[in-house]
Image 1 (cartoon, rainbow, N blue to C red):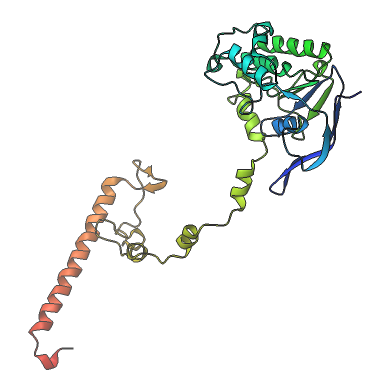
Image 2 (spheres, rainbow, N blue to C red; image 1 turned 90 degrees about the vertical axis):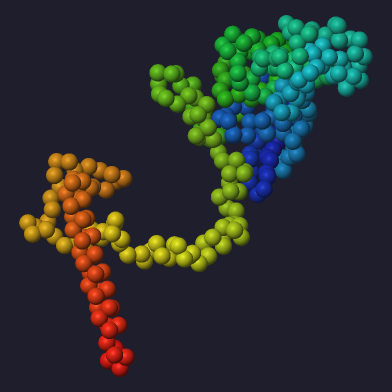
Length: 322
């Protein structure tokens, strides 16, 4: 007879289904794996099946004791392993004096929470969950931060729990199908296998992150209306400096190249010193400087001629001035 049954389970947030129509049953001794890439909703499914997350659809019959679930049941940094055990005994209505009789599965009782490795956190989660005498135990991210030896050891502990008649729920990116009774795959497709260093420059974590579905915050950012400041920035009139920049004439140091008179020998051709500067081609600097000086001289001649006309106009009688 199943110790946990989920029928048509779904969770919806902000008009978006995180998952839906999930049916699963766990018998005593079963190991149920929830598999998928980061961001696929593995932890949400785990907490929903453990009845620690409000459902939007469906129902769950049965309950589970939580092992290690990051940011949900993380160890207290300043408490030792033994102090964690005493605290949990009190919470479940048992005497803390029984702490000395609790199997610690190889953990040092004096280790504090902040000193625990990812593997030791998972083991402590199992120790504490078993104090509730549950029929189902749930653990999150059992392949996060563990080396091959630690992973094998943790799977051995899970197999021992299953042999005792407990059902086990776990989440992971990938699992060996031979180790589990049921596998719930999220994200539509299988997660990519780990990439070896010789296979390419991107580690498996980065490849998985590229394929993860967008979070609610990212989806909301696409559709959010523009703020008043952003709308005002689109419609504000241009400043005097910006208007002047559009219409300013070429100055002596910046002659207008397309209006420059051609030399007598015809259009100047770039010499072997031609180079690329900022994405545009510039002729040899010696020839360009000579042409600039010629344009400056022409501009100066025009200015002198205009000044002479003004002076002559001022010498005429008032009635003859135009």
